[in-house]
Length: 92
Length: 180
Ligand SMILES: [Zn+2]
Image (cartoon, rainbow over all chains, first blue to last red; front, top):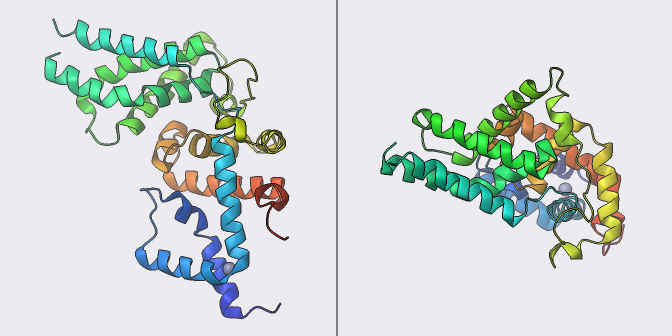
């Protein structure tokens, strides 16, 4: 299928912003205009929609990745007790 | 230290204990060492409380964890390994930790092992960013604090890391329901 030059430019523009769009990180927010333009493009572009979906699935897979070092609850409790001692001890 | 300061400190720190332990565990890989690192970091944080502006406590605390880790390593070993080799070198500790939660069990085993391979193939500096942001759910600024790089560097590394992971996994793993 032949793409218009305009659409190619918008695909390129979109590709550069998809991750910021999905992350919605406070350090690098998109403007309301950028979000509107990006969402309008996703509504009509199959390829960019697929890329967006891949990023979503990748993020979800990473957030469930079993190789992540997850502290156990006892570690959390011990550090919390330590914090209590640290702050109580200096109170007297 | 008076009650108000003690309370303020505790309010900043308590919600961040788990994420501090996660980052510490990424750095040390040993649970006991991670606890030591966090406890030492808390002592330093308390000492530095006066210079903390009260905004972004997580980024502040993670910066202290990174610096404390570097200091402790310097003390222990005259020739420390590259600081971020460690973080980049995580391997799944199958069977070593707690049992996977019901939700974790849903990550398809094939995708999981492909993901581990793809992460291992990444350059450590790219891998560390993706582990902090996507695996441990840190913000760009918090990852920047842990890695001691500007936020822009976090963003560009993250973008490249994710695109490499997408390419390595391919659409058959990431969007299996869709026609290619
Ligand atoms: Zn497009």
